[in-house]
Structure formats: C-alpha cells, structure tokens
Length: 425
Picture 1 (cartoon, rainbow, N blue to C red):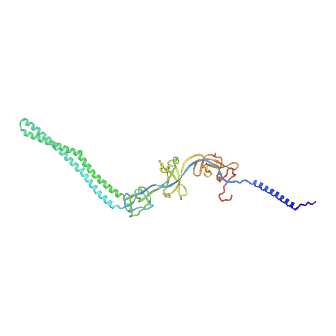
Picture 2 (picture 1 turned 180 degrees about the vertical axis):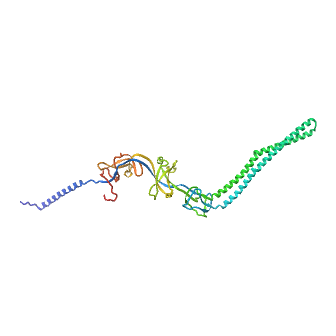
Picture 3 (picture 1 turned 90 degrees about the vertical axis):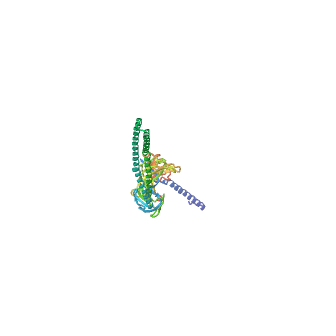
C-alpha cells in the first residue's frame, strides 16, 4: 500500500527531522567539550636547602683614597719651578715645587747676621763682663776688709797709748775716724758684691739672653718664610691635580698640588644604626666596581663611633687593596657586607618569594596531587641569592622557584623548564 503525504506535511516532517539531528549533534559537541583535558602549567621547582646562611648587607658607596693632601702654600708668590706632573708618584717629604723666594732669602740672611751679633754680645756679657765685675767686687771687698782690720788695730793701739798718756787725744780721734771710714768702705764693698751675686749678675744674663732669643726668633721666622716656598708632599701617593704652570701666582689657601694615597681605597657607606650594630671591625665584604668583572674583596676598617647628624646614619669604611692602581678614587660602587649568620637554616631562592600588596610574603608549593598551593611564610636572613624561611616551610615541600607569579591556587603544574616569554608552549 502506498502512503501519500501532502507536500506541506512533508516539509514539516523534514524540518522536525533536521531539528532532531541538530540536537543530537549539539549534545555530542557539549559532551566532547566537557571531556577536554585540564591545562597543565610547567614550572621550575625544588626542595628547600638546609644549611648555614649569612646576611649580606647591600649598599651604595663611593671609593675614596686612603689619604689625601690638598697642598696649599702659606705665602702668595709666583711658582718658580714644578718638579712633578699629574700622575707622578711621590714619596713623603719629596720636593714638589719651589716658589719665588729671593727677597725672603735676603731677609733671612740679614736676620742671621743680627743673631750672630746678639750671640757674640751674649758671650761677652756672660763669659767676660759678668765674671770680671764679680771678681773686681770680690777683690774690693777683701781690700776693704783688710783696711778695716788694720784701722781697727791702730785705733785699739792708740787707745792704750792714750790711756797711758803717751799720745794726745787728737791722735786717738784721728784713728777712730779712719776706722769709721774703713768700716763704711767695707760695708759698701760687701753690699756691691751681694748685689752682683743676687741681682745684677742674673739681670745681666737675662738681658743678654733676651736679646739673643729675640734675634733667634727673627731668624727662625725668616727661615720659616723661606721654607714655605719649598712645597713638599706630606704623604706618599700620586699627584692627581696641579692646576697652575710655572710663572703663575700661587695663592694662600688655594690648593697648588693634590696628592692621593691610592695604594688602598675606602668604600664609604652609610648604614642605619640597627644594621651597623651587627658589624664588627675586620668583617669580610665585597665591592662591585663598574668595569671590573668580579667583586673585589675587602674588610671593614672603620665603624664610626657617632651618628651622622644630617642623616642619622653610621658611616662604615671598607678597605680595598689597590696596589696595582686598577681602581680609581671617586668611582661609585656597590658594597656587600657579610652580617649575621644563621646555622641549619631552611633556605629557598629569593626568586621563589611572592610579595603581596600589603607586604606579606608567600611561596607556591607543589602538592602530592600535582596542584599548586600558596603558603604564607616568614622570612629571615638573605644573602642576595637565597633567603631563610623562619616559618611556613619545614624543608620537605617542593617550592616553585620559577613560574609562580600569577599562578592560581589549585592549578595543575608539572615540574620542568618553564617556557620563556614569547615562546610557544
């Protein structure tokens, strides 16, 4: 039997069949999407290390010479001769330059003559005049004493004769008068000798000594003026600056030659008081200098005993050997000083640490099921590469060291080499 369908009914049936087929296809597509495998992120990870870790204090520094002398003349005069150039190596006490000094030399010569004359006067007064005066006064005293004794004897003799009636009273009176004169002459001679011994002799010596000292002082001042024209280096080092040429006038207070001792350099850094208190003299340090491939070793040579009043920081000096002259004073550098040491510490690479906006620290670890999990940590000492984990890890977890940034908690991960930016995953 043949079935007959109206054309309109046939069209409706075809649309229903097409709709059913579409639903079947869509149902199959949705099932296929739900069954798609979950994405897996490749990360680098490792277990924390347990061992000693030392704190590294990083700071900027400027290299300064071990010693420096900006030599300024004490007098203003033209430069007669320079004996050094920039870059010349000099020793302590070496003559560097001479200023014009002929007028000063002449003045010194004149003062030397005055000193010689004063010295001769001193010798005459102290070695000839004073002894002669003293000897004469002593002789006068002895003569007066002898005369007094003689007149005393004469007076005594005439007194007896007078009592016996052998002489007139006038003769006795003459003897008494002569005795009185002899006594007066003796007293004068004795007082004169005493004055020479206690006052005049010392005063004469002081007067002569004062004149000699005055002449000596003038000579010393003149010779000092001459010596100021000879510019010498107070330290051993290298001439780093010489702004004038021969014939130009050197001015008092203006550096004529600068000498630096660069056999060692000082990397000067300013650290907070709390950090500086953890350092001691002789601690190891390293200095990174531009243009030098490897850090240069050094040691702390000074920890300032007082805070800088402007910055309230402590100045610390790191001494670096520069015997070869490879490093230049004034160069900016980076200093790393070894501070505290923590033994048996749990440590991870610094790259593994994630810092939140509020400053909290965390790391991503890999769970046993292969998912990433964020763990909050408390950090301690870091040495510039690794950091101590004081809380949050026990050392048995696997910590993601690369690829943790932006990784959501629970994301499937596999340990390998993460793809670099721009590479196909």
